[in-house]
Image 1 (tube, rainbow, N blue to C red):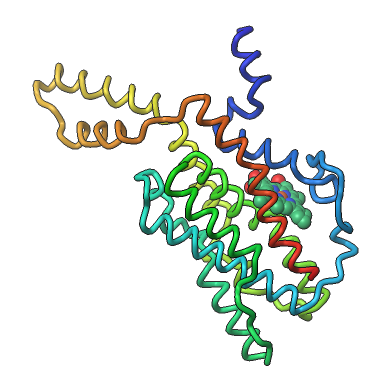
Image 2 (cartoon, protein in one colour; image 1 turned 180 degrees about the vertical axis):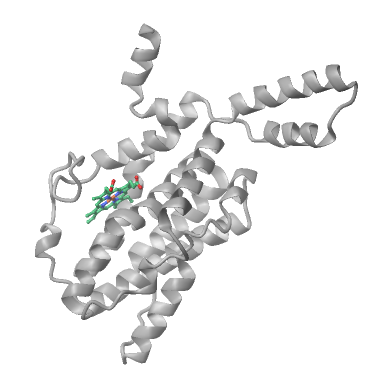
Amino acid sequence: TAAATAAKKRYPGEAKGFVEEMRFVAMKLHTRDQAKEGEKEAEGPPMAKWEPSVDGYLRFLVDSKLVFETLEGIVERPAFPEYAEFRNTGLERSESLAKDLEWFKEQGHTIPEPSSPGVTYANYLQELSEKDPQAFICHFYNIYFAHTAGGRMIGKKVAEKILNKKELEFYKWNGELSPLLQNVRDKLNRVAEVVLLLLLLITLNVLMSFCVHLCCPSFWFLTKTLCFHQSWTREEKNHCLEETEKSFKFSGDILRLILS
Ligand code: HEM
């Protein structure tokens, strides 16, 4: 219908679910040399010309660890119930980063303290998570997914140039990565749009009450649980999408540490 077409135009990716909307906004914020869907002008040198140093890369790893620890702490002690879904997704990175830093130490390198880009982002995430779940979820998505896409490419390039191709734990996941990602996509989509499922469950409950003359307690329990997880309004979704630029800004500052 015309209305559906108009909605599709206004919110690209909407038909496929909210994660696709977040992805669309994120891809446009890449530069063209970073990703073919990118639309931004390049600021620094293209990745092919990067001259990383071990010290700079260590600063990047230390600040990344602080950011992942912060995210993992936030979902462990959720200020909003919807965060609890994102515990133990298999995407967690702070333990693997701790192992990598241990390895660098054994190689005789001094591990620096977290620097300003990482501390600033970690503080921002902590505050945001307590007052603005939509914006926080945007960062959560971008940080984990950026790392599995561009982050891995960067890791490979840097390892070729300065680590004798040593593959760090930061870039290894337990088992296949793509089902882990899909599981998190499904959860993100569910946080943003749970209304249909709720309607379905209520209908099922009513039908069951009629047919069996008996309520299934576990169905009612599920329905009640879902009622707490209100789906996001269009305004809340837009608010989440608008946060993407900040996520690029903060993560970009941490990425640039590699070249410092
Ligand atoms: C996806 C490269 C920085 C967020 C991608 C993809 C590439 C890429 C090639 C496409 C992957 C695919 O669809 O197969 C890069 C490079 C970067 C960079 C080279 C920096 C040098 C960032 C930053 C963010 C970000 C700073 C945000 C914090 C994302 C997201 C996706 C993505 C959310 C979608 C991943 C998915 O759909 O699974 N990136 N990126 N990227 N990037 Fe980046």
